[in-house]
Structures are given as structure tokens and as C-alpha cells.
Amino acid sequence: MSTPTPDRIRTTVTEYLRRIEASSAAGIADLYTDTATVEDPVGSDVRKGREEILPLYAALESSRNKTELLTLKIAGNEAAFHFRVTSEVAGTEYVFEPIDVMTFDDDGRITSMRAFWSAPDASDS
Image 1 (cartoon, rainbow, N blue to C red):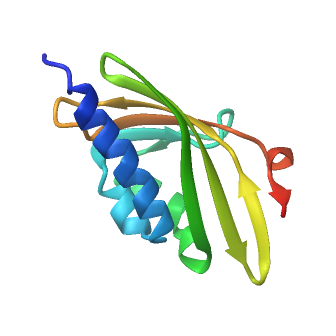
Image 2 (cartoon, rainbow, N blue to C red):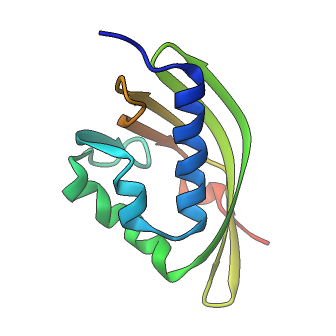
């Protein structure tokens, strides 16, 4: 089994953040493999497969979002990245700064994601 290049992983992470900004639940889900898992936030039930992952991102479709990549570390077929999401929902702006840890297949598609954050981490701006 080969490992995706760091550039390929970087491209997927960048596209993930772009699709969050675009509020595209289907677009984000398409970055995952058919058998991917998501634990968002860590400690919640693990979602398996795109069919279960898609509803997680559907909430983005009712908000305006801006993202900023703060830190990205890549090792082998894994990446950990800290980013900021500013979401406007019904006139109120919220800021989240999760740390996501992802694994990738040979083509740079996401095979697993764990998001480290909790509700108290969000702030009104």
C-alpha cells in the first residue's frame, strides 16, 4: 500500500475547508471514502459511511461560514490540523477552533476523521 503525498493531503484539507465555506454538505461528504468514519466531536457516536456522515454537515447549509487554516501537520497518511470557523447563524456569529485528525487513502480521500472540540469552545463574536 502506498501513502498519499503530503501535497495530496494538503490539497484535500484545503478543499475540505473550502467546502465548509461553501456550506456544501454533499461536497464535504464526497471527500470521504464510502466506508469512512467520523467522530465529531470526539466522544460522540461514530458515524460510518457517507450516508451517516452527510447529515453531520447539513447544518452548515443554513449558515454563512468562513474558515482559516491555522496549523497543519502531516505524517504518513495522517494529518492533524487546527482551524477557525466563523459561522453566522440567524444574525449571530459564532467562532469555533477545532482540531481535526484525519487519515487518508492512497488517492487522498478521507478514511477517518476525529474532531476535537466541545460546545464551551465556541464563542459569540
